[in-house]
Amino acid sequence: MFLTIKTIKMNCQLCQKESDAYRGDKLSRDMRIQVESHLKTCVTCSEIYRVIAISDKVFNHEKELQANPFLATRIMTRIESPAFTMDKNIPVYVRILKPALITLSMAAAIFLGIVVGNLSRPTDMNEVLPLELALIDDAAIESVDILSNE
Image (cartoon, rainbow, N blue to C red):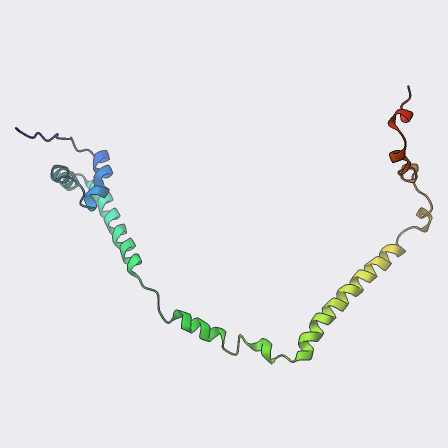
């Protein structure tokens, strides 16, 4: 009983397809030998493999980085510093007076806008209403059949 190993002709496409399994040591012995021999002879595939291997090292190094344990403490200290707590040093009357003045100025601006708008409106337009607006309530009462000209 002989085991026959199917020999596959290694090309660039197959080598690049199997490169992940080669890096992860998941290839059979025969396929691993073929990939290694192809990488030794093919400059393009060996360059691609080298770039991928370097990027894997960079990614693995980034995964190993640990956060600074004192970062949260430094941030909280900075937040609690006097520069961030200036609101507490402002007198009470200023904290109340500012919103009151803003509200009062907004009310004055609205009132002034209404007054100026009424002054610019012609006075003779007050008495003239279009006929459609005068009879708008009658349209709901009347039947549609009356309005037809048959």
